[in-house]
Length: 434
Image (cartoon, rainbow, N blue to C red):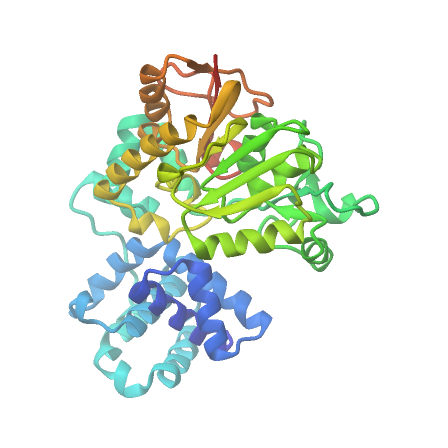
């Protein structure tokens, strides 16, 4: 392992703990600080993602060989101990290489900083370990690497057999998907270098190497010829089905993949109003829409719940903030930040955003509600709550329908599960205003 790769990983994990940054944001900040090469960046990225994915299990192992109060351990040391535990217990790295990694860590963090933890380091390297759990819920949480409260909720919702499939699938990343961008006037794409075409969905591919882009693919991304977008997100735009000349409202629109896809489906004819509350995210949205040559979208930094615009749309797309339980495999840090209290706050916001967005749907127009959550309380329950209070809206059949049917009687909605559909977990409901 390159020393600078380890340094970047330790620094990034410190930023994640200190500033609650996501994996990618922390990685790029650390890489800028330490001037990492592309190879070092890739190696550090793997360490960050996989150590974070197994975090609670690694902490359980470390607690068995350490007397230190985890809250008193410096962020950099804590990150290194987790990396070392990952390499030993999950990656099965041999003792000689573990000693080399530890030697590098002494140079990165300073031997004085690591000195109080040398006994713990020695025990991690030399001892075997197994999960210690107080009850079956905790054991399942440690085996599948999720919070215990979340494990209880998934078991209650889906039963033990299906729940274990859902939870265990989060222990490895989902493949990347890409779609062609017809807004760019380019020669036919070299399909054999892109990936495996997705049956029934034209112009969409699953990468041949499911976890990274090759040089030819990166060139196509940089020119805007193809767009990285998860399969479930692509399906939600196809379900919304805007037509050339339509007026479209895209709420919670950043970072812009959905906006650019809607514009492509509309052949850059019509109008898209994209709204997001984050100025930073909308700055990225602006760059993205320019890159892919989307010319009909107009961005507004605003809270859709307070939007004072007389805008009547043929198509409204609502993708509100959610628990991200469907992307735990892709972004494992998210599973350690979710709590029951935050979940309840998100549900209240989803209901409010859906209600506010519906005011802009013209008579006969459609509203597509989607989340990257697998929890019914953010999906079917929110839609059912809305329909009971808005009798002028009704469920609309979806095309294409390639996921699983919705739960709790909303069979017209569709769901995606990582263990079934090999993409992010997702939910889509389409409603029409009568």
